[in-house]
Length: 202
Image (tube, rainbow, N blue to C red; front, top):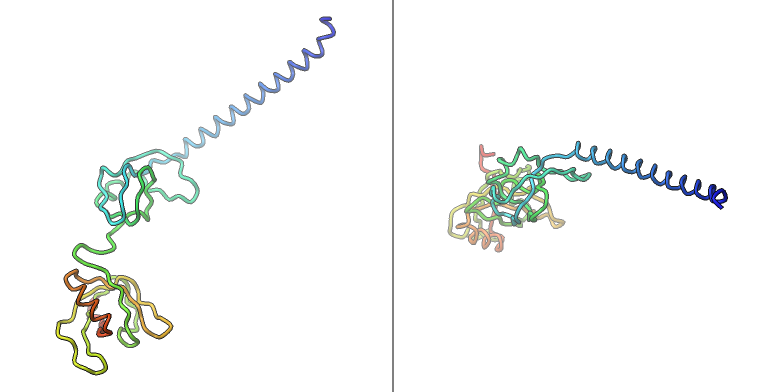
């Protein structure tokens, strides 16, 4: 009986040896992959509590973690954390997420200012390109040759480059002082504005 079982035992032993060898190989592969991941890990900035768009980022909102960033994820290195504190969130930054360069920067609208979108008829603004930050004057004008409305011109800055509509009119975003916003909005709604680039200003 013992001799008859020898081939069966041999086959079983070979099977267990193969399983053991496979386990060793997989273990070695796993260790190699783990080592590769650890060697590629980067120290990056993480968001420790949610920061909403337009809020100022504080030190308490940020932390540091070590990760292997996924392909296409551009995380901010941990050594830049000091330059992030005090900047403005340009997107909603969710708790537990990695901070990306697109997530923070300078505020879209300065304190005390508002952004307005203006629709100006053809010929009511310069044809030359005006990059964001260009200082301009918003000048009140009369309609159909009439008297201009009372009130002074308003200093503004270009917020987005002007675009042209199919009817020839232009649209452009400008930043103005909050105290002037209602006045400018009324003039724009009544088609009583001309945009003039200030001489010698960027």
